[in-house]
Amino acid sequence: MARKRKKKTTTYNGPSAYKRYLSSLRFALNDAKLVTCYAKFKSSELHHMFYNLPKLLPAESCNHLLTQVELKKINKLIRFKLLKEKLDVADRNATIFDIIILYTYSIGMQKRIARETGDRNNPEIDKFKDLEKKFYRQFFERYVLMLVRVTLQMSIPSTKYIAINVRIAAIFKDNPALDVITELSGVNAKKSYVGINGNYRPIFQLGSPDFTIGFRWIEVCNTVLPATHQTKHDSLSLHIQAHALRRLKERLNLLSTEALHYALWENTVKIKSILAYKQYLLLPYKLHGVIVGYMVMDVIEDKLICKTFLFITHNSTPEGDKLKQISGLGKHDISYWKIDRLSTFVNMPENQYPQLLELFNEAGLGELSELKNKAFDVETLQLANLDGLSEYISRGSNADQVQKQEFKQMLASCAV
Image 1 (spheres, rainbow, N blue to C red):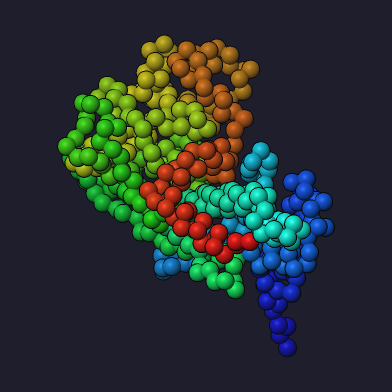
Image 2 (tube, rainbow, N blue to C red; image 1 turned 180 degrees about the horizontal axis):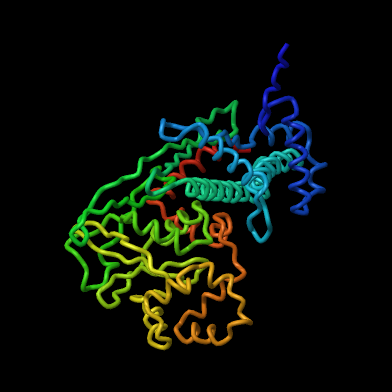
């Protein structure tokens, strides 16, 4: 007879949920050097804190374009990041779940102060109300940041993107906890064809997850272009040629597929300037803040197209032309000696080739040596640019309005 499967439990259900919460609370308070506070809470106050624990429900798929296999992988990544990944918050390392626990602590302290002083309007309560808002804001920002990071890992310009919708379930007086619902959906890639040099080439439109509207196609302001190339259009849709995707994979050969697509997003989601060089439009392309090459751009009607990717040593880049000038190395020499690959520079034993390194420095390639001790997996690249990711999220068109509405809901449900 087949054995019955045990029902999986989470932080929020099952007979041991409350015990797990208390254990997490003690650990978080101890880590925050507040462990003595735990013993001063009454059982009713601890239960109140537990009931106010935000419920982060597993992400749901909203359309057939996001498969159950993909959803399972996403939820696994989300759970790991919630419970295990520590990021700097308020000058200390904390997981998103740590922040949630401290959020409930600030709610419990309001109850405790009211009980101990017999004054529900005690000024000390206001301090913990402010702390409650602070922890909620940190939690919400970090949670959305984590979702953007996870969905970017699985968004492929030539296949599909993933859209995000985060909402708070309706709050009732008898059920004060915040139910955080995450809805994800697939967005089909936009493929089209344009005439380039007399041939029709496949191109893919570049997009980005956006928690305020779910998803958006990237637009580039016309004024970003050099004056000589500006058009009558206020903005241009951004596209990449299939050829450019192949060149990225070939020349940034230390990056996994996920890391390649994340780096492409990071370099194109907010283009600030494009360089006019000779007859080319060049977009500097960075890894860990170091220029490793350039996207060759072209304007066709109302589209800005990434035609190909040149490594920084290639001819037709400022550094590559300087290298050719002082060394005599031509296009075929660069390819033959494989100095148009990221791996060549990262793995080069510097002590064996001092003259070659001196040559690279003279050509303006010295910063590439900063990449020798860097990792190029998608997690490392994302963590290296957390500030940039946070800035991208915070500039959502209606982010402030969304947060204010949620703060009102939260405060109404948690008032002392």
